[in-house]
Amino acid sequence: MSLKTRYSAYHFECGTDEAGRGCLAGPVTAAAIILPTSFKHNLLNDSKQLSESKRQLLKPIVETQSVSFAVAHIFEEEIDTINILNASIKAMHGAIAQLEPIPEFIIVDGNRFKPFNSIPFDTIVKGDSKYLSIAAASVLAKTYRDDYMEQIHEEFPMYNWKQNKGYPTKEHRAAIKKYGITKYHRKSFRLLPEQYKLDI
Image (cartoon, rainbow, N blue to C red; front, side, top):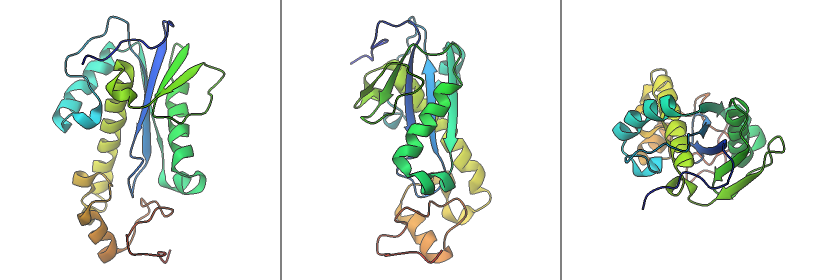
């Protein structure tokens, strides 16, 4: 099934998506993008369906062919303060705020969003597998977040963030158990399955 170019009748329709909601460490990252109505690419799909190499291949294509794109991170301290859902929406707002021209309509992956600057919007469950702009935003959010996790991996290689990107893999949890937590861990998350609380 090919992805649709437009959801609304507006010319400057922006798609937005986030990556890293379920991670134990690192930021939640959102991207927003306005694609031209003529945009097409056979590879583009929901970033979760794509290999890392395909996402990296698509990243410069969607960036150079977009009308406008932007990325925003919300870091672990703020995630712990405002919770992951609010942090995800704040990251999406942060990305949308950087777009020029200002979008006339916003389509959001998922089912939760808060109004942004009175711009009309709609939430679309599995939107990243239905609309090109949300799929492109999912690719950008994932690649920019992955790049960040690879950078901080150098500081704390024992958690292997280069590989697991902060997700709750067995290896990541074993490293938390062995070495404790870092400044990049989300302290409001259940970092170990058997824990009741971490001594922080």
